[in-house]
Length: 428
Ligand SMILES: *[C@@H]1O[C@H](CO)[C@@H](O)[C@H](O)[C@H]1NC(C)=O
Ligand SMILES: *[C@@H]1O[C@H](CO)[C@@H](O)[C@H](O)[C@H]1NC(C)=O
Ligand SMILES: *[C@@H]1O[C@H](CO)[C@@H](O)[C@H](O)[C@H]1NC(C)=O
Image (tube, rainbow, N blue to C red; front, side, top):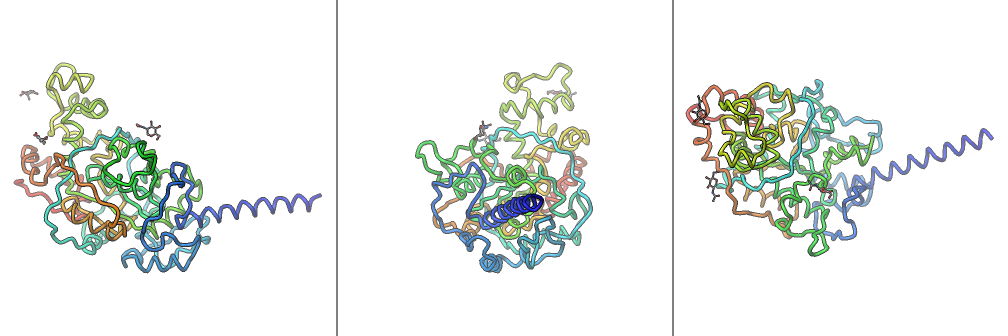
């Protein structure tokens, strides 16, 4: 009797272990996904980056693929991603992480997500000046190592120390093995569209097939986070395996990000959220700014509609004051539209293979799509929109007192330094 029970228990444990192995390996090569929203029936095979169609668990394929990646993704100091199951798939010669370290000191959670309505604000592609990817990546490494500039929160922590809620901007496409960290106000609508087309994850209601043209996807749909597979959702899908899977994907997938001059991004955020009657943003932020920093003795209008009808709206100065107010982040972490890029995308923990600049969007997107091996069939949408141009910085910030501009620079200094944007002049 005792033996029988023992055998039965051993059988069950063994079976469970095998199932786990299968999940890990299948998912690692992207041939199979547990993500429920993916419409696998319609997946057509597109030419993807090397290795995307590797057989499950093929170590050889993985090695080949790794050799094809830029050298910077292969060698980096630091510990390997730990985790109870790490022996299952050896992380070989590299880890996507920088040096180990001190406990993270990020701000509390409390993310407020708003329906997307990000239609304006992207910079026109300027001249294609010095687009050295190696230079951009080297700069990030230097800043992260502390060699070239000061410290900032979370600089030296390990990837494993980043809480799940801070990983909600990393979108994963298993089909082509791509990870995109989206930064609001940096062409993220269009890159999200591209990610949707790449992953074939959304069926167009009109054709009944997955979207193949990025610009066909409505902006409000593409900003609905439920259609994207992000790292923050891994816990829900893969439970205790999630950290291990993230480490594997960070190591093998091509990771990209687009950035922008931090001050110009703020102008863009202000224009987009407060220059028109946006109820969500008015109620949650605009009315707060008016109440706290406005000189109005009377009441602040309840709704954006009322406020705009009365010609009342928060000024850019009030927006800046709000950002600089120490109480703001005590109440809730910065909204993603003005949160620092280093806090959204963790460039010291995620080694991006491609760092695009909005200022050179056209050239950079061409280069990226070529690098991803999808430029034959996918085109980055170019929209004629009322974009915020870098040259507007002078107009907008010249009315902000110098002391406040200095404080604002301090607040966004890591972004300026990591991504190579020069400190704004005193006399803008
Ligand atoms: C987002 O999409 C989900 C399902 O696809 C839907 O249930 C939800 O209502 C959408 N949310 C918004 C804000 O449109
Ligand atoms: C108060 O605000 C109004 C308009 O918002 C402005 O015209 C006026 O100069 C302000 N008063 C002071 C004392 O700042
Ligand atoms: C573009 O935006 C600026 C500033 O927000 C505004 O003054 C201008 O009228 C807009 N132009 C168009 C064509 O919408």
